[in-house]
Length: 68
Image (cartoon, rainbow, N blue to C red):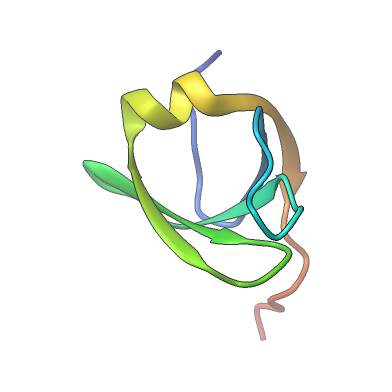
């Protein structure tokens, strides 16, 4: 899996969150990556290596925020 993450990308992880959702939005990038659950809105931090291991596929960009 390519390590090309961008803010606003939607990811599908291998395991589901306890709320039942498996889609996450990247909110912040750095040494750790901050993710927001698409189901319940919970925020979590994962190290980049851990995120790469847990990612099933990259779904695209989030359309929730309009730039303007």
